[in-house]
Image (cartoon, rainbow, N blue to C red; front, top):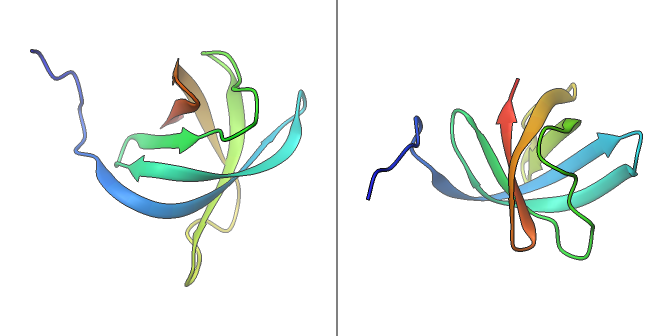
Length: 87
């Protein structure tokens, strides 16, 4: 099987605050992270469709990972989660 990943994934306990005009603000959790993006468990939220650009802030128990929201694009939706890449 061909692995198309450009970056290695690592399991992570990261809180993700996601913002978009269509749904406002939601708080969800990342399942894994890489240098290229994150996979987010959408829980009971409806996932945005592929191609959607969202603003994202991430934090751990020790504090913010990024102070200002960054743009990320939904690249795939699978199950109850979405893959987001940095843009």
